[in-house]
Amino acid sequence: MKKAIIFFILALLILPNIIAVDLTLEKKEAMDVVVAGLDEPARFTFNITNNKGNDEFYFYNLLGFTMTPKEIVPINEDETKEVEITVLPRQDLEVRNYYTFPIYIRGKDSSEIEKKLTVKIIDLEDAFEIGSGEIAPESNSITIYILNKENFNFKDLNVKFESKFFEKEETFDLKAMERKEFTIELQKDDFKQLIAGFYTLDAQVSIEDLDAELEGVIKFVEQDIVEEIKNDYGFIVNTKRIQKTNNGNTVELVNTVVEKNIISRLFTSFSPEPSAVERKGATVTYTWTQEILPGGTFEVLVKTNWLYPFIILLFIFIIVVLVYRFTSTDVVLRKKISFVKAKGGEFALKVSIFAYAKKYVERVNIVDRLPSLMKLYQRFGGEQPSRINEKLGLIEWSFEKLEQGEVRTLSYIVYSKNVGVMGKFALPSAAVIYQKDGKVHEAESNKAFFMAEPKKQDADFE
Image (cartoon, one colour):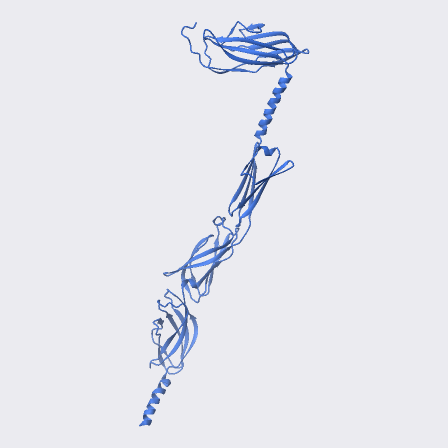
């Protein structure tokens, strides 16, 4: 009896081992990455060989992970069948990186084997790397890339790239470990004021309802480019414009130099004022020192106004002519006008002529023209005229000689009873004709001016 009981117990212990499933699993390929938040499971492909007896197998796990195949998979004895096992961890699983867990394959007699699988669980932003090539101020384009670092295929991936240099949006598929590049045309005006250095390349990645922010780096290569433009125009007012533009991406310290001689500098103005002025001999050097930011411009205006020296020369010429006339004339006439108060209320003027002999002269004849519309008063103070022609409006004085330094004062009065005079009027010059050393000479006086307003008529004026 005891032997029978012992035999029964041994049979219970040995029998399960005899009838237990006997499978060989060979991993063929695997997409073992799971992106948290996406409904895309990890995929493992196995070649499964049934080493003992025809059987039907059921695949499951004890962690609540979604798993396929869900249906029973029949495999005959010594048969090898390719089976894809998919596993999608629960959304509430907070584990990241690698996670190993068991799955079970059970036969129809409830015997089973255990197989451990490892999946990599990542967040969306950890799947990618973005970057770009270098960029320079003269670059017309740049190449950027996005790299899928994981063993996961992304479909309909939307990426928006943003930087100081450009913006670009693309939608595409990105296979496992694939690197996709994009060449972007650049607009230089978008970055002409940027300084050399490293700039952020941002990317917003979207797939299904999941978003992630990525960050890369763009290197803006240091380059010094200063463009100079010179314009020179104008003759009387000469303008020189010197413009320097920083087309590089570094702060540039530039010097602008202009040279002038000691004459032209007197008539030259600058905008802005120079930083330094240095004189060597007849040359004056003006220097401007200025920092220019990338994309900035520094302009110097130098204006030389030759009208000023022309006016000065003209003034000198007039003085020389007047001096010459004064020194070359032996008799100088000066004419003067003053108002006279008449008893009858007439408009009256006193005309005075001063004749000055610088040298001894003979046969001197002085002629003056009477103002039109006015009558000559027949009484004279000082020298008496030698001839009066009222019809022609002339009055003359004659002298046999004038000694050196002699001055003669000639005067007469003109009036008007019925004609009112208004405004500013000029009387003609008086003339003198004389002889010196047997030669006849002429000279004229200045023109005399007077201002007058309308005369109020008196009712009992006759």
